[in-house]
Amino acid sequence: MEKKDLDYFRQLLENELNLLIEKAGETVWELMEASSDNESDLLDRATQELSQNNVFRIRSRESRLIKKIRESLQAIEDGTYGICEDCEEPIAIERLMARPVTSYCISCKSRREAFEKAIGY
Image (cartoon, rainbow, N blue to C red; front, side):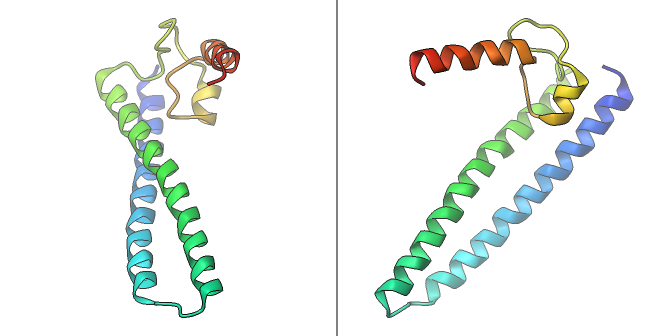
């Protein structure tokens, strides 16, 4: 992969990482404020807890994405970014544009997904 492409993906990944970390910080503040609001009505409290559970689920997914972004940034530093972990062939730029944190080419990822589906994972 050319240096300009690597620079582009590095910047893209760093921007996404910064955005996710900023969101996580905002969530902490929101949850701290929400915990100080003790709703006396049971329905209001249930609604608030449901909303918080949804936020936790979203942030959990974002936390896994943060890990993948950091791994991708490390791969850029190591010189392995854009190389499929299974077949060790270059991953298409189009695939990286769609999913910059991917570590598998489309055929290897499809094969993995078919296997996971077959075993019920």
